[in-house]
Length: 338
Image (tube, rainbow, N blue to C red; front, side, top):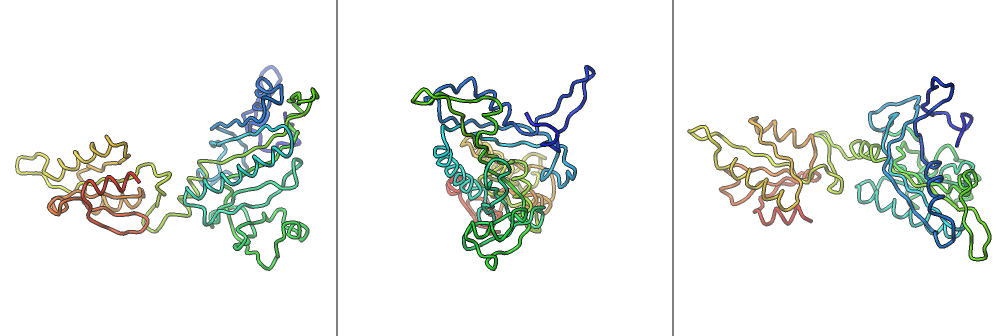
């Protein structure tokens, strides 16, 4: 494991028997130990193990809600390869996969593969930094090459090594939403994780670590994609695809009118097709419901009223563009199932 001279944010406590226990701040150690049960031969490699797990860190400046907390969820991936060449092949695949992830999240145009310190493991690691004024990191961006350099490693030698000109760089604030590291044999040596190769020789396993913080990503989406009316969730990660609103009035007998009955039916019909919808059936003013829909930011707002029913469908607003159109149920379903 790692001792106090290496870890400065370990949440731990002394036990009554004089020993110490600590909460997991990262998981290279337990995963490396676990993989000894599964890796003995070259036939067992490569292996790629992932998890979604809670981590705890004694952050001095915990702030900004889910952007930087002492308890947070991480998506971890660890690679176990037989040699440096095999590791590099997977490392590049993982890097591109992360680029694709942030594209799908709607952050691709402002997220940069950023060269950062590789620590004691490698020359460089790669961070995925999203440009936002809410960020705490400072990076220097080459917009044409779509790469960046963390201020912490910014030197003339590094720029020369990367083939980047200082005059092409722009200073930006950013938040780190993911990172990938080459770990070499640091942990496989410490935990004696090795394998027997084709020649019968014992070799250490080459490792890599790849992480994305779902909570921080969610906070970054809110910080970067919101407008003056509220959140604008990308369809790929929206809690619901649509926000259904009924605008109705009670009939003379005090029961549900045609609009409410139609909204109830539509909600069930969409749910039966696997479309996730949040239904605002409150007895509240239409303006209040519309404002709340914008604030919550689902990709589509669907309004059912006597007026829309008379027109043969529903009023559908696209949250990101603000465009509104009248759609029949078949058209609406096709739109939401894209």
